[in-house]
Amino acid sequence: MANERRVVITGCGVATPFGVGVESLWDGLASGKSGIRKIEAYDPGGFDSVLGAEVPEFKTRDYIPKNYRKSVKVMARDIELAVACAYEAVKDAGLVTKCIIDRGESEGPVTIDPTRFGANIGAGLICADIQELAGSLQTSGNHDTLEFDFKQWGEEGMTTLTPLWLLKFLPNMLGCHVTIVHDSQAPSNTITCGEASSHLAIGEAYRTIARGAADVCICGGAESKMNPMSVMRQQVMGRIVSGHDDTPGAACKPFSHDSDGMVAGEGGGLLILEELESAKSRGARIYCEVAGFGAASKITSWHEPDPAGRAISLAIRNALADANVTTDNVDLLCTMGSGICGFDDSELAGIRTAFGGRKGIPTMANKGSVGMGGAGCGSIDLAATTMAMHHNTIPPSKNASSAQTDGVLQFAESDPVDARIDVAVSHAYSLSGAQTAAVVLRRYEA
Image (cartoon, rainbow, N blue to C red; front, side):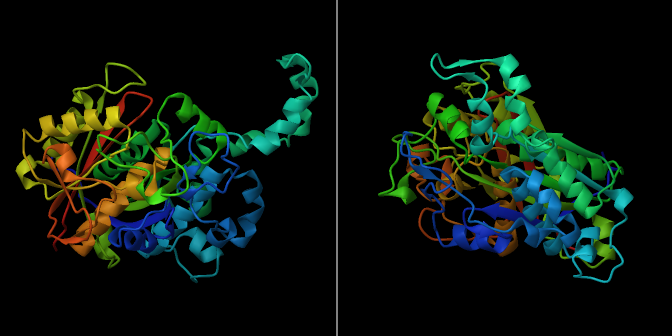
């Protein structure tokens, strides 16, 4: 609506296989690197693929106040990723929050009213730590018959777990820790819609600020798929690439007819969305404007792609209509490009319909570099899109070929391409679910 407030992006914080921080993501993408390598988190020898896209190890305590470090004991890997992304986003935006003051990095005061500071964070269904769970399971069944005894689990197995064990694995705990650390008191929400989670969370934050319920929101998503249970789940679904460690950089091939699956990964990104006048009043650097948001639902199968990609098409069209721009105005499209042939075909069909047969759409596809990180992958894409606009550059899309899309998509296939990007679209969909979403970004000029 015409009276809605304008929303801009003033900060980006990411954790990807290239490292923690948006600079590491941009440097990795722009230089055509791959973050895919042999899995180190566990022994992948018994799986179809030994490859993954892991975030290099970091210390969570480097991203929280000293008085909060005991809480790390109840943080699963997903939560730690979100906490690191939140700190990076706040620092990148030049905000002073309670966390920044408590860490001794500013004498204050805070630069945003906590009651006007919201949060929307996408999360996955966090897998339990196998080492922790194994001990309990050993006491809860018959080793000869391999039968699980629920009574024994309740009487003995659960007693080996710490009282706060479950708090490590609740999806809403990503948002809980981030809002506590940074004292974010305005409306908040957790969205668990698979790979569409980040786009949906960012879209909700955009709406929250536009309607006046908050002035700043930290939003996006994070997830780790680097858990044997998670990888096995995708392997059973037939989605994991059958790759070995001899050519990891060529493992994931978005929109390629000879691709045999995705590479499981981890990571996330949190963006700082801010009401325009709020950003201007504190002299913030503005990356770009969030101009539109759209969502849709697939009505076919919850676990198989719709060959026509109708929900993808509808989400893109809804977002463009919300931004009041046409497909001819789009200077960059950031695709999901999973590397799973059926899903990529569905996505391409949806794009073709949404763009009315337009050819040569300038496009970026990042999964060949950073893998598929579940609920966090969409925010990484949006952070990359934001950086592309900021640097007036389209980075190369590793292992993606324009010819494989019949010329509908035009990738930078080997070197970065200089380009003025005034309007960009990023979209995502859930691999196991119905949700689809798209976000339109627009260049901000004072």
